[in-house]
Length: 423
Image (cartoon, rainbow, N blue to C red):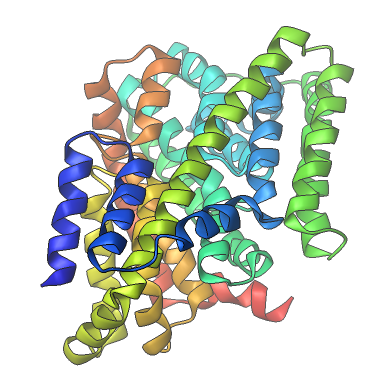
């Protein structure tokens, strides 16, 4: 009963348009005061959020992705990929997904991926006769690869909250990320093959391929440095983010695509996003501490253990809940609200937390492209100057593909677990 009342209070605050950070933190403080619990732990919780070497990776990855975004790297990357696959059926769609995958391996951000590639791909695909809803849906869904293909900011947060290995989470995201990108590519190929509006483009010459590939080579090398250094144990995710940011500055200034004004804007955008994330983290820390002291996670674990004995049924219930709350909460808030409650049950049921993290990330990917608060919907609406109805219409097939990928990973866990446990 207590858990239900707390949940209703939280939903009431959120529906009243109270910012997520203040809803979580304020409710957590109220619960502590009502329970005669010492509020002294609140400043301790706030300090522990800021005093984290691992979380330094978040602003650094944001800085790197914003520098690349302002530096116009998306144009070079898309042009290079398009020169190789653009003449295939659905080639521009395929180029869009591959470009999203490569940029995802640098940025760790879904919004940055969608904005960077969308700036280029939407105009190119629209000129070639692709229906606008399909174009908007493809780019919005391709952007979600930014939080599945490592490095991933939500995976960093998941690792901090659950105290699981972030490197293992990154490794676990490789297989599912490639699989999901492959499913998007397959859908684009089939869609174009049966579409009456599709206009094929001529095959690029070898000189154009060489020129565009050389222009995009620094970006590919950056992705190799960022990801390879982590997996080879050369540096930590935080150090990788710092090195990636430094190299990204070298790239954009070498290509002469960056100005002082653009760099200033990139820093300001990164700062605003970082402050938002850390405020939500702080509020979630207070809320998580309060509900733990009220033994709500433990009670829910007992409730689940008494009523749900099948792992499949548990995963199905979690996915349904995440789909529902994803309609009105953004991905990071979902992660920070749900994981303190779900994690004890995950451990008690013997579920691999790394595998569960991948399922969780795929489900919050769905939240990024489902109305009314999916962040990628608003990004694509702004970048493509689109009607929201067209964007929403275009994302539904890709939402179903994401759900299919979660189902496949449930039945074949090795897609996520083979790399972290064998390499």
